[in-house]
Image (cartoon, rainbow, N blue to C red; front, side, top):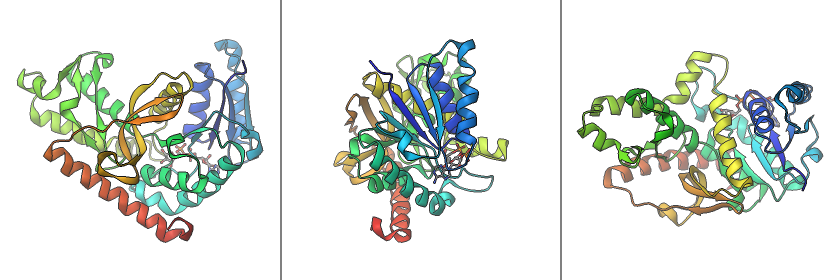
Length: 320
Ligand code: APR
């Protein structure tokens, strides 16, 4: 059987890291697409030259031609510009919306059966626009945010409790931004919910609140440190987790920006929700019941995303 084909649209910091991870994990062959001449070719060759030492056989190709992504099984989209210090994800809207239009058309014409994972920010609005521009089925187009936000939450919690990250699960809902909703009662250490751990004296409510805030600001913290771009190792790893669940039909239950058609009371709208990812793409949006407080936070987050989607419609009339 032929190896799966994975097209990476955007060969910048995240795109290059994705290509390296795909090769190391032997998930398939890679096509790196970028408008910047030389960048995808250079990264593809550099990673391919690590193959003999690592022992992988994946083929890697860099290109400026959409025809090369033909019949890709998975497309991961990072094309666009990242944040600089002082910028919010929303500041990227106008520039990256135009990029989504060309990427959506490129995917529709060449890889209409692909499972598409968008990473470009502002995520929830960009994944919506990408689905609109590409016309691909909504269950085949999703966005990566929740896996990353949950991973950040899990990392901070494992440091606080001094336990293995493997035993920490976390649940984050809503848009990928300052309004995201980390759900503490669904986040656990080996099944023990965080509110119980507070009662057990493992941490205090104040410390937990600070960790939740640090999770919300997780992207900005990295931007502030790097100064010339935004996070790329953890975002790439998170998207690979989603791609692997699709390619291997693992049916992982992962939070991601998915199209809600009635779930969570939303219609025709992308936002971060728990999903099952299998061979069919987003096979299910898991509609959980929120408490009153959680619903208020979720609604606030949804409203922020709705504002961005309206702004997209204002910029590009074909989306209205
Ligand atoms: N088509 C293809 N590639 C494009 C296009 C386009 N129309 N426009 C820009 N690019 C490419 C750039 O040439 C660059 O190589 O997208 C790449 C983006 O890479 P980086 O600037 O390194 O950004 P990165 O850190 O990878 O982040 C990409 O993901 O997390 C989000 O906010 C982040 O929106 C940003 C995206």
